[in-house]
Length: 213
Image (cartoon, helix red, strand yellow):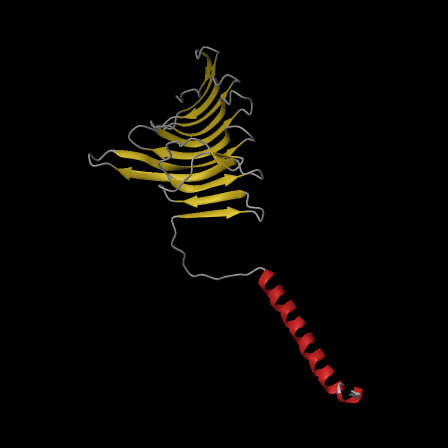
């Protein structure tokens, strides 16, 4: 039987055209499936959000009180700790906690205010908080101000700028052992002063304005 080549051309062209169309369609679909997708949502109601890098490394957690995780180091959560707050926690490139913003506050049945306030903190690599902006005022604590701590293993507080429970505005500078050595303050009645203290906390000199006559 003799096959005529000329009669095969239309069939070949039809097959070639269909194959090319299928390949191009597959490429476009594959490209569309791998392209980043942006979704716009007016409102999202969740208990916890985990933000991760493309490789899965945890970088940020936003959670309510019951879902806020314990301390995470290298992507692994350490034994649970008491964290009666909601907020967000920051993690470094290795998935270890590097700071956070937490807040809470409630009134107990007896009228007692508990765990009322918030804190924004930044941790040093592999260590504790070195900078903390905190506002806590409840039945047991009053800490309102900026705290700066040493980066050595002891991590003692070195600087405090804030307001005390008696209404005094104060700037305190501490030594490497966390002992206050200089205190600049303005009392609730407006009286200013500058106090120098020794290593035992005893006042060695105090400067205050001379009373006007």
